[in-house]
Amino acid sequence: MKRLAAGAAFALAAVFGLSQVPQAAAAPARDTATTAAPVFSVMDYGAKADGSTNDSAAIEKAITAANGAGGGIVRFPSGRYKSKNTVHLRSEVTLQLDSGATILGSSADTYDKPESNPNDDYQDYGHSHFHNAMFYGDKLTDIGFTGSGTIDGAGNLITGTPDSGEADKIISLTRCDGLTLDGITLRRGGHFAALINGCENVTSDHLTIDTASDRDGWNIISTTNVTITHADIAANDDALAFKSDYALGAKLSNGHVKVTDSHLSAKCCNALMFGSETCGDFSDYDFQGITITGADKSGLGMVSMDGANISDVHYRDITMTNVHSPIMQKIGTRKRCGGNPGVGHISDITYDNITGTGNTPSFSPTLWGESGGNHISGVTFNNVNLTVPGGNGTMSTAVPSNDSDDYNPKSIGTRPAFGWYLHNADHITFNDSSVRFAKDDGRPAVIANSGSALRFDHFTAERGSDSPADVIVQNVSGYCLADSANTSGGALRVSTSGSSENCSS
Image (cartoon, rainbow, N blue to C red):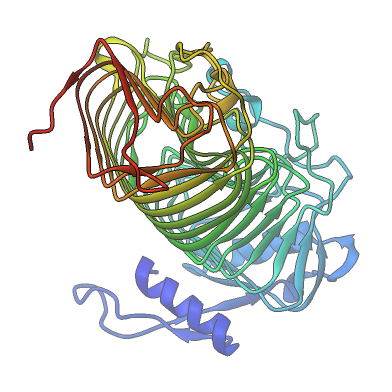
C-alpha cells in the first residue's frame, strides 16, 4: 500500500466503522484501478478476548495474514485481549483497536528475551535492548496503531532491568519507515510506553499515554520527520523525550519535528526534553501550543551531554505550571557515544510567548555552556514571563558547583540568581520578558557570567528587599539593558565586573 493513501484509508475505517476502505490509485505505470485495504479481525484467527486466554498467537496470525495479502488492517473488536508473548509486527499492517478493546500485558514472563548488544555501554539498559516488549518490529514500513482502544501493561511491565521473559516497554521499534500512532491509549508501559529508534516519517494524532505510575511516556530516538498533534502524555519519568544514542551502533541524525496542541506532565522528571542521550545532531524542531502541568526536573529541558549539536529549535505559545526548572539548557562532557565524540553545542534557539511557574527556589532557569568554543549561543526570548518560588536569602554570587557528567538541574548547585543564571553564553537576547518571585528573595534577578553580546530590551525583574543588585554581569563582553525596569517601574540596579557595555544595534 502507498503510505499516505493507506494511512488516510485506515483513519476513515476507524471513524466510520468500515470493514473495507478504498485505497488510493497506484502509480499509472502499474495499475490505475483502486483496491480495498482488507480487514482481518483477530477473532477470526482464534482470539477469545476474555481477559485471561493468551491471544498472542491469534494476533500474530492475523498480522501475518494481513502482511501476506500485501497489507491491511488487523482489527480488535471490543474485548479484553491478554497477550503473554511478544507480538512481532510486520510491514504494511495497521492494528486498529475499536472502542472498548484493550490489549493487556502479562506477568507470565514469556516475552522475548532481550537481544545482545555490543554497544551496551553507551546508553542505559532499557535503551540498548528492543526485543523484550509487548510489540516489536525492526526495519518495517508503513505500520500503525489506530482506533480508540487501549494497550495496557496492566502493571506487569518492568521499570528497571528486566529478567529474561519480562518486558519493559509496550511498543519497541527500530529502523522503521512510516509509523502512525493515532487515537489509542497506552497505559502502564514499564520503562517506556513507546520507544522508537532510527525511524523516519512518524505521525501521531490524539495519542494518550499514561505512565504516571511507571516511567517514560514516549522516547523518540535518532528519528527524522515527525509530526505529533493533540498528544496527552502523563508520565512519571520523562513525558516526551528526543534523544540520540549509540544503541544501533552509529551516530544518527535527528530532526524535522513538529509537536503542536499537546499536554505533558512528568512527576519525577522532564516534560519536554532533549537528552540525556545526545550522540547525533538535532536540527529543525518546532513546539507550539503546549501545556505542561508538572515536572520535577525541567519543563523545557535541553542538554547536550555526548557531543551533539542542537540547533534550530523553536518553542512558541507554551504554558508551564509546577515545574522545578521552567527552562534549562546545559552542555556537558559525559561523551557517552561511540567514535570519540567531542563536546557539543547548543545554538539558534527561540522561545516565544512562554509562561511558567517554578516550584523550587534552587533550580532557577539556566543556560549553562561549556568553556572555550562550546558556549551556548544565539538564544532569544520573546515575551517569556516566569514566576519562581523565591524565598532564599542572600548568598555568594560566585559560580556554583557543576557536575559536567550529570544532566539533571540539580547537577548545578543552587543558582546565585533567583531568576536567570547564564554561564558561558553568547548572543543571548530577552525582549518584552520578565521574571518574578512568589516570595521575597535575597538573590539578584539575573546573573550572567562569562559570555558576550547579552541584551535585555523591555525586561522586567522583581526586586528582592535584600538583594545586592537586580542584574549582575561578570566577565561579559558587550551587555546592554534598554528600557528595562523593576516591577515598580524603577530602574534596574546593575552591578558589573570585568564586563563592557555595548548598546549599539
